[in-house]
Length: 297
Image: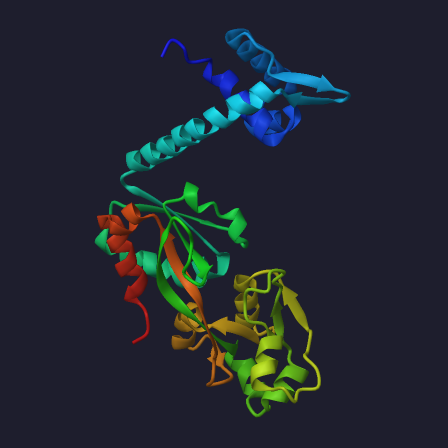
């Protein structure tokens, strides 16, 4: 252990090589650039060899530094992962869960109430993000994600299949009840969900499969996530595409009404995603049971 270099200096070196910049390394480690330079000097003194060299305006790692980085990067990653797991184990009464805003608001929270009945000491910390890349499932205990069930390195369990139907508040539904599918598309008012990655069903998909004779698609309202779309529909602002499993409670309580009996379906859905030891744990089994408890029969 006496041969190990200073950990702060090692972290600074690893970040500089990985990010390709002292400035970006300083930003990631939340320190000033002079502190990074000082840590690199400390490591160079400890090792007895220069690790970076100037090439014009750039500072680049030496070939020896690149080889050193290749050997230590995996060890540092293993240390970080082991620490994350230890922290999780220390939070025996807490569960960190990430998902989308709409799913959390309209589907997840009632089911967590069921979980509290079976695990009263368990604290569930729910965080939300609109994009998958903003939900680092490796930093959470589990996540509820939309996809085809395949997340390398993780287990998944299907919770809600993708079945989408037009929904509206009762007053709005009464106004358009006699409209054909084509006139519904043409006259709206439709609430569109913005999706740059084209993962979700859209009104264009509904037109292609249910009303190809429609002359146009109303473009009244555009929103950025499903929670806003459903909220606007509840407020009577227009007609949204609702995921059946997500809005089932709102339909059962009469707050929303379906405008078509034939949903769009795919092989995708919302999945609980976690590592095996979470799924197989007592808390994981209780979570799965709670998330399935209120599904329509």
